[in-house]
Length: 181
Image (cartoon, rainbow, N blue to C red; front, side, top):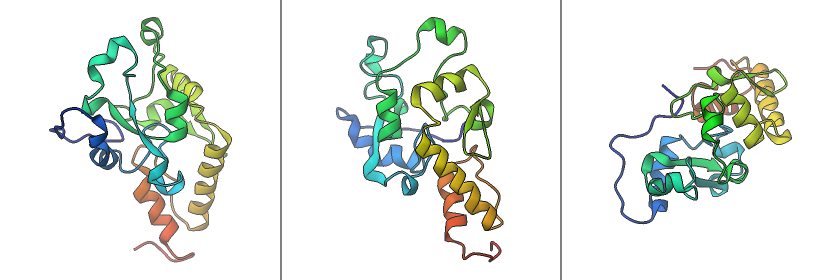
């Protein structure tokens, strides 16, 4: 079981996959499918795009262009870095692939350091972190700041195995030094 649950059955539209946007956004709980940041920390919903997890430009996946379960919610930067990248069959056989948070848990592939850096724990984590630059300065700084805010407010740090939005809202919205309700 992954971090994000996709609706079943999927909505049915013929033609333009962009009509899935509100449903995909809800399934991903307004979080990027890759860096896991919520819209409120990643320049808002206008900075998010629909990504074809298995790239539609790859002939192997041409038939998935309008497949609801192949459409992911991604911030612009992660979508840009991922682009049409997909590992070769040889890499996949060696465990190098994109982590899929619809079926994978964060803790199976990464550990978060106190600095906000994500340390890969698997070949899939290594591949994903490298291709998507998941330790780019901005992300590391945001994650470190979230840890600091949680500590100041006496809240647990983010559990990256769950969608981040509700957790972030919980400790950002509490008045300082007030226990949670």
